[in-house]
Length: 396
Ligand SMILES: [Fe+2]
Image (cartoon, rainbow, N blue to C red; front, side, top):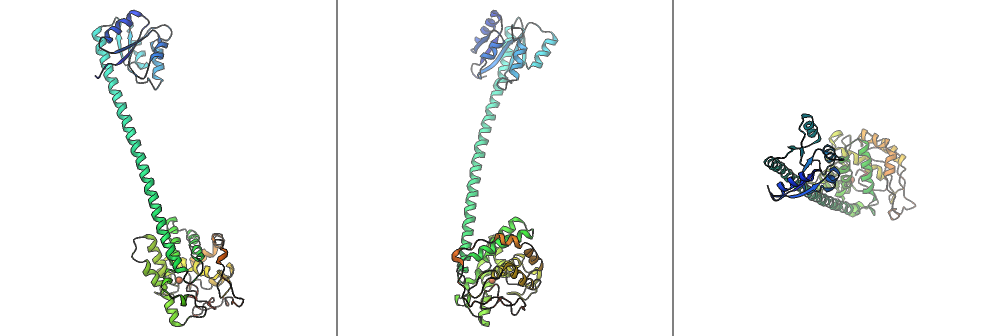
């Protein structure tokens, strides 16, 4: 046992207090005394290691004191030895029920006192050690948890930064391609938003919608490899120019190929497939039906819709309803019929997702700019070809 301990002796008889104090003080312990129950409660301190408690005292007796101690978290496990001259079975049972740890009978025997006190002090020492270990452990756990929280927050911040840098790189790559044949970047913003609306309307998982809608912005990244003279040509394309224009799907897939990024991989699938047609007459591979990646089919619908409803130097934009009517004739030919139907059924949400056009985004439209031709058209002569070479609408 380490060092002197603090012992409180409570007895209303001065002689009893002095006798016990002499016995225990002689061992080097720090002794304090109380004459009744109220004084016991007043003199207890966090340093008290043991209470020797007389059962019969005026005012609060020993059992009353015990009920107060065990109801108080500060003293609920303080070792208590009850000192009593009455040793009836009932007295002992009541004392045990009150939470007393041991008994010493009056008149006290020195040897018995020392043995019982030593046993309780050892128990208290073990309790204190356990409390210290628990406190140390809790502190270590709290410190480690805090460190882990900070590390996790740092990691999440770094991941967010990396992802944002990744997306920023993609946006700039897409913008570089987009600005080759357009004066604004609004098209890619609308494609992303429309794709997200359509993906959700198709009940695709949220993570897939996020990736797909971001990746859809890369559908025409291959235009970076097409000469500006062809991209911006106002008149009809020659057969050679059309063939060259169509290589943008393969060029885009080539640019995006071989990445470990899920986003880049999705972008590659969309770039290579967004000009495929449901009936197999598209390019570059002539895929048909479900063989065309789903996000390629989604991009085909939103890309054509956006092109039809956007102003071009050579024509006015179509209304949403007119564009949809025109596209409906290609349902099951150009467009996946289910994807198109879901798109048409959610036109209000598509409209709501459309960003406000920037003032600078409006192209000037010559007075002579022709309107799109009649909806009646064939695959070999799509309806919106009039005067414009847009690679996604004109299906060149
Ligand atoms: Fe395209």
